[in-house]
Image (cartoon, rainbow, N blue to C red; front, side, top):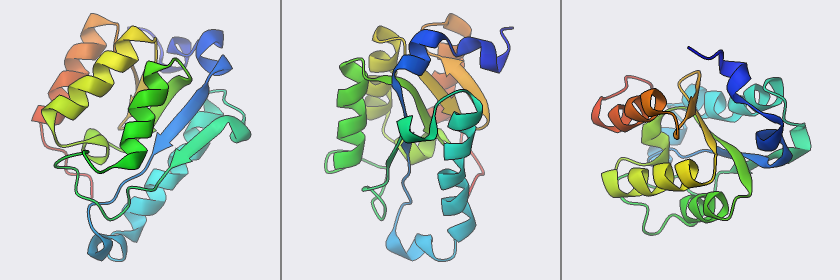
Length: 149
């Protein structure tokens, strides 16, 4: 198995890292402040993997929105568009439920990442969607519930 940091190549580092932050509802923001802070703390993980701090783009405009559909999530739409245009070297999120709870949206992001050699960092692991083993794990992430709050 390839070491996590070895998956990050100079080509990935030439592009920005995108940190996507979402909390389901405004009511969830206060009691789950720790979860929200852990999402923002992923910025430091991107830096530890080699991205300069100014090249870590934080998308948090979808706070207070459910992950059931990303139709009105401007931040998620920007994320997928920028990945599709080859601007993103890595997408970081605390877990897949922060990105989407909808299979179609999740698959759209995975396809964009696969086509554009964009890594995905979830639950402490770097995944390469173009790698068959990593892709299988990423596909299972949406089907298997996480107990991250």
